[in-house]
Length: 125
Image 1 (cartoon, rainbow, N blue to C red):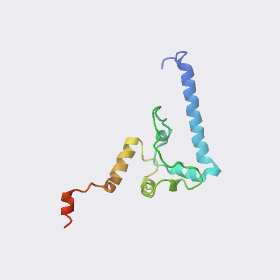
Image 2: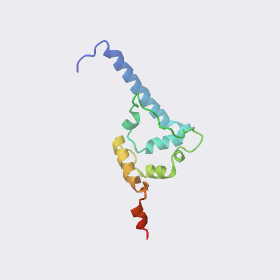
Image 3: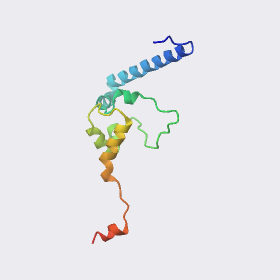
Image 4: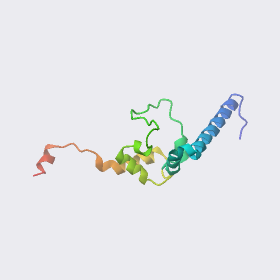
C-alpha cells in the first residue's frame, strides 16, 4: 500500500474518526437501557449495518413524511401495510437499496390501482 500524501493523511484520519464515532453511536443505541425499543429495532432490522451506515448523497432531498418524534412506538410510525411487510423480512436480509425496492415493488404490485377503461366497464356485465 503506498504511503499517503500530506493532503491525504488528514482526510484519512478524519474518515477513520468518523467511522469510529459511527460505530460507537450504533453500539450505544443498541445497548442503551433507555432505548430498549430502538435496540430491538436495530437488532431485528432487515438491513445490514453496512447499508445503514452509508452516508446520504450531498444532493439528497428527504421526502416529505411525518417525522418520528420519539413519543410513540417506532414500529407504529410506519403505515400499517408497509409496517406489516417490513416486519416479515428476516433480520439482515437486505444488502442494497435496489434489493429492497425490488422486494417492495414485488410485494405491493397487486396494490397498484389500475386505471379503468370503457372495455373494463363492459367486462363487468
